[in-house]
Image 1 (cartoon, rainbow, N blue to C red):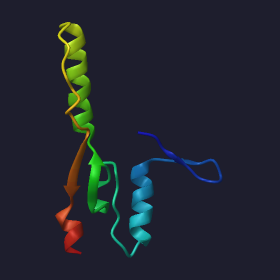
Image 2: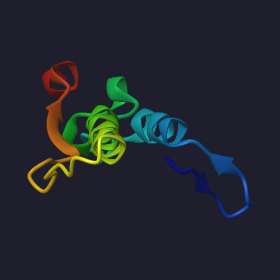
Image 3: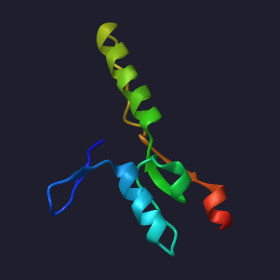
Length: 87
């Protein structure tokens, strides 16, 4: 995952950006990344676990020379943080 750069050229990790937004926001925060879980409500997110499974399947398919159809695999999943929804 990348990082954010402010107008002064300072790089900040997405988790830190979400913490700053969360401290100042008076509305729910949704994210497409499954990071900084305690500070976001959730949403339709890119799952790092699913990306790992997908890449593992590709590598296995390549090593065994056994093409695998991954067209129905998704790296997205819907997640909600019920603690945030309760607030």
